[in-house]
Length: 325
Ligand SMILES: C[S@@+](CC[C@H](N)C(=O)[O-])C[C@H]1O[C@@H](n2cnc3c(N)ncnc32)[C@H](O)[C@@H]1O
Image 1 (cartoon, rainbow, N blue to C red):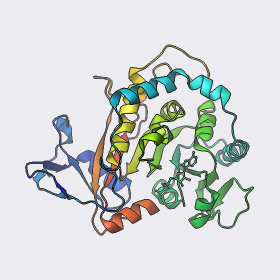
Image 2: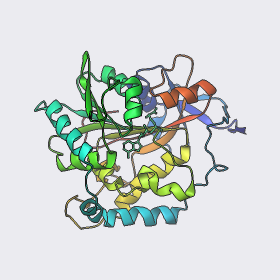
Image 3: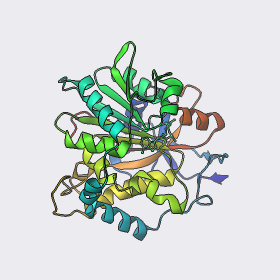
Image 4: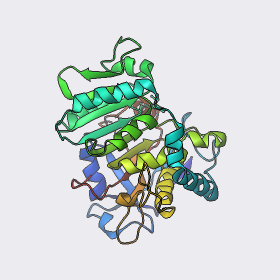
């Protein structure tokens, strides 16, 4: 068990308290102040405390998988940016995702409502929660696994041909069976209709093996698409390194900017996530400290909370959005 030094200062932040409301639960989100933490993160509620980091059977730390070498990550991200259009031209779109996208367009219609993506929604617990929390937005819960979608969501016992499923009494939610990279690509091509306000990636498969690095979203060829989609990004994981590396990859997207503009405009990629003053990313990884009143957003989160596994959140603000997060 690693003890965080007593001298570590923890502070409730305006930012994190806002997100207590945003998650719809009374989670105590505390920011470990680092040397880089900005002054405006500080509030009157500052307090001194120490805490323990527990280790459970689910913990992914350096003994399970070492962080990626910065040079390796840099090489992968810049390659994916340079080759994104080649990737798009070579990869045929999955037929069921095309159909799912058409049905999604019909569901959205001409409403011009803001859209919230819950990518990799699993059984859909978070999608339902988001639907209640944001009644004026359209929530799209997307997962490739029919099996997972059937477990909780209204997908129920739908046949293998079913690719979308609305929710009775919750007209702002649609569950979608689709391949995420293809679905993101289609959203991007229709960006005028698909105004993504928030994009949740909750407990994405972390693939904590060096050999599986390219399966993680931030090291995947579709990462530039995810970045270009925009919207406030909200990620949660029990693997802090996953979130740190996601943030690094996003920063690298900007640092590897190119002037090429073809299918996907990869000029100024990720600019909307940067702080205009110092061209650094507006985001940081925080540990979420929960108490008994905390309502888990997903099944994985519930499993981790039940055994005291530390969970982390990365929120990256899209500066082009009017609403705060
Ligand atoms: C670890 S689970 C997390 C599920 C849920 N968010 C939760 O926290 O309980 C990751 C989910 O992402 C989905 N997924 C992974 N890769 C995907 C892809 N390429 N397209 C669509 N869904 C994908 C999986 O089917 C799985 O349900």
